[in-house]
Image (cartoon, rainbow, N blue to C red; front, top):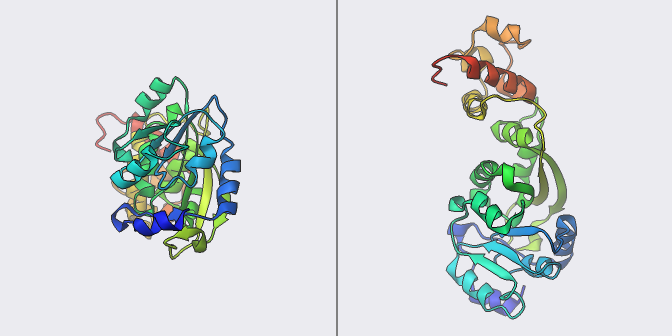
Length: 272
């Protein structure tokens, strides 16, 4: 990143901005993404273009989504990038990715150094468009990356782990120290790759039931299932699914949650 440009522009806390500047890390990320000219490449939060420029060197055109007007103006007049970018100045949480894929006539490859303050809701938002996404590469706070890949019987395992792993195969790609960013965050970051399954590992009849079930279970994660799920299942009903009612939410596998969600889906006039 050009120091003079950065000094003119201080990262805005309200946007959760931490700009990547480490060239070795940037090269490793671009290699992991491996962009090709015939692909629909979309970057969320390009910032000053630290990742945008090396990715754009591999392709003819790409789309970037940036809410910050000053950064949009910087990208729009960039001598190399201005002709390569389709710039969408918009809150990413309001972007219709289905329409974007239709316009590009291809499934999307999405990447970005995500603002820490919107990472979790944004990932959940993108799952609504999973059918038009080829893969995703995101730089995330390490704690969040750990939650994405966590397995049962782990404190990091939760609702995000279950929903994310239902939709995608998730792989940590690269751990990045704070010094690779300006301003430096207080924690390490991890680049993760999320590849949607062509066919989910477990069948779920109604995804809203799985989302509701996991929300209820993990809102009271220290309680036993007998207590946290008492409005949904009796101890006997849990036992019929091979589930000990004295376990806690973090002890159940994704398969168990999917099976319970399917039971809820089969109930007539269920409020949950």
